[in-house]
Image 1 (cartoon, rainbow, N blue to C red):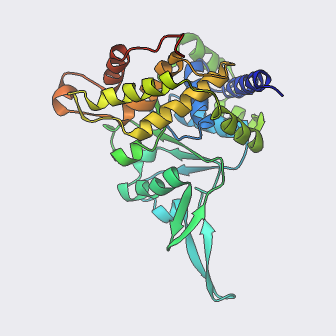
Image 2 (image 1 turned 60 degrees about the horizontal axis):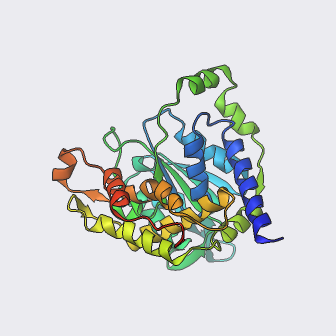
Image 3 (image 1 turned 120 degrees about the vertical axis):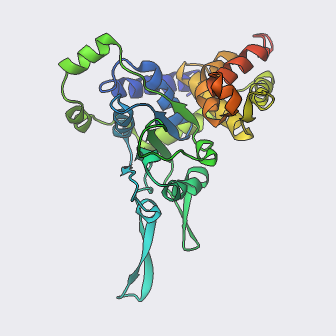
Length: 321
């Protein structure tokens, strides 16, 4: 199968995934596509918004759409790190300790209300989100691949929440906000079947092997040298902004390029264009930035800084791409 046929097949499978998720997440096509781009970049997704707008529904619908092992962890203040990673238990029959894997050992892990867990419990995800393995009592245990954490988070000013540390936020490839549905979507939601029942009946539209092949294929897409330079310039512009205490790290550059490749393949192209970078810059970069207190008082956000960087960095011309 030639490259054009492979890209067309990728776009077809991406559309099938998006359509399946949209059966329960209505009126949010742009958010669904961003979430699937994150999945096919083999990155981790943070969904942040007020309760009741479909954060967990999106995560569960993505899990149900792929025929792979998935697990859900409900974060609470009394959740322990071993409840996530697993624990070694002494077997009297063999006179040895045996490792009992926790729910993190799945392809898709839904971390529901992650910021309700204590900082100690949140830190249990740091190693596995970066290195795709868990170390328990000095022994590393790799998690299955592909691997993705889909975390939901309530706004940090709500009661009973603990802010995620910068190191953990940086491990999420993308952060999105669901927002309230429009009028027609909410009417359709009320008129339709209960969401829980629909999720239980959702058939998977993709096998784990197909997902792994799509992830591998997207990262082989062609990137012209001017676009490498463009991505680095956009990310570097955040480090020079006086309204920030912390700019984006090189991890942001890598994440932005990975996501841009997936977006291009989903659009049926075997190459990325500057519009792919521009469309993904805010959800990939903004949550990694720390705004100074003075700028925060003026209403400046990380998204504002990224938008400013996109305006100031020259866009590569089509002929150069």
